Length: 396
Ligand SMILES: [Zn+2]
Image (cartoon, rainbow, N blue to C red; front, top):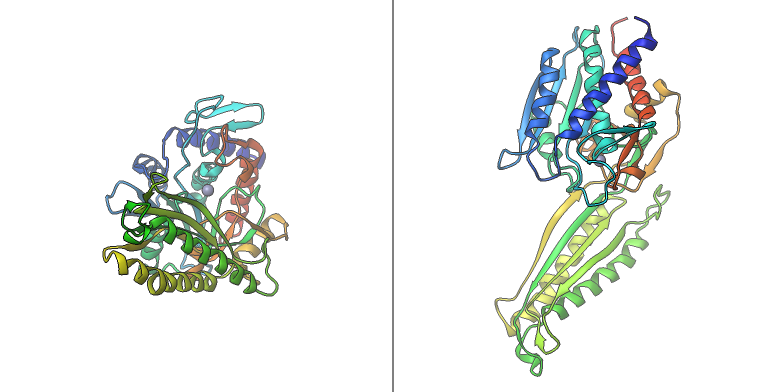
């Protein structure tokens, strides 16, 4: 069979698999085990070994499967990585979001570009890897709950450390139009809860106003934001170049004439370096515990300030000599490197010494939106990259 026909066949298969994947309603936080079973089945039939890791309730699953090298491997393993969850759907879709629909040159459906398209391509290509004389291991990493601050991947990463899978190349197929992304900021989200004492507004000294203490806390955050700007690293590659901080919401109080006993603040920071997040949290916690809280407790000893971590997605740092980026460049001829403003699991793999790149089919422009789609041509581009990886991973 000629390469052209072969590619057509692979393409048709990837569309079929993508259609199946979209039909699994794997919204973040929900059970994704049927989709994982589906992927595991395909890979097992090809001779892959696999293991699973779970959340506490064992209803959400990460899958890590391996097609072994045919010789004692000389090259670093390659990890093809994607998240299996999708963001929720809102009203207004022209088609059923969980039924893949092809119109013209596009395939519509929730997760089509973010990021079941990539998973479909690697599963469609897996039979070729399994038939090839591989001289390195090819791993498939499918995680849960990436969209809710990367809750699944850290559980998998712990297991990879235990199994000594720390030296390799990881390709995260988030939608980048197959461009090479080699860095992004971190994304740390928090909610801070204030509990004071309710009372009549005519006697403020007899109550502890949660809203007032929350306001002072927000004031401190804004003050620290200036400090983050002063800490801008030289040669920062990001826009804006410094770590940002944003107050997403302040919620508290019930009436004009009642001292609010409860208030909470939603806030986030996007650090350019990990140290900024450590600095910010240390300064903030110190202020809350040494200034605000003692003040609140003078009037009401049961007052409290509690900071809840919603998610801490570590940043993905540019590595001047990146095996992962060089591999993609050598296969596609594209030597550009870009940064993005969205977070991914890349920093988690990078942190344990795995050379990582974000590169996958589709555009982030269509992600998380009504009528999400992937341009079909993008799947073909992805399959070509996977073919390049095969040619780079066989015994000559
Ligand atoms: Zn994604």
